[in-house]
Every structure is written in C-alpha cells, then in structure tokens.
Length: 75
Image (cartoon, rainbow, N blue to C red):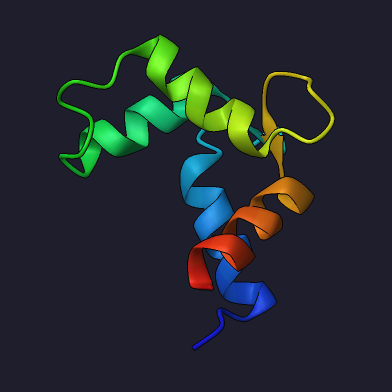
C-alpha cells in the first residue's frame, strides 16, 4: 500500500530534526540510533545512505528526493 503525501511529509519531518527542509547524515544517524538500528552505522555509512538518494548532490536529501526513496522502498 502506497503512503499518502501527508504520511510521507510526516515521515520526512521525523528525519528532518532541525526543520530546515533537508535530511543530512547527522539527522539520519540520530533517528536510526533512536530506533535502535544504527548500532554500527557511523557518519560515513549514513552519508552513503544519503548519497544514494541525493539527486542534486548537495550532501543531503530534500523532500522531493525523500519521495523518490519512499517510492523505491514501497516497490
């Protein structure tokens, strides 16, 4: 079942801890750690995860890029 745009926006806000409209490696690491997933994931590994969906190569994921991730994850 596909997530609605509202659900995707809510999920994005969870990761965008500082509310600047972007998810960076530090924010990703913080959320993953709080969920118990990042025991071995350091900054470099989180940056690689960000880079995989960072279409404009600015080192962070914006909402449009996050939507692409959500589409891929749901497929």
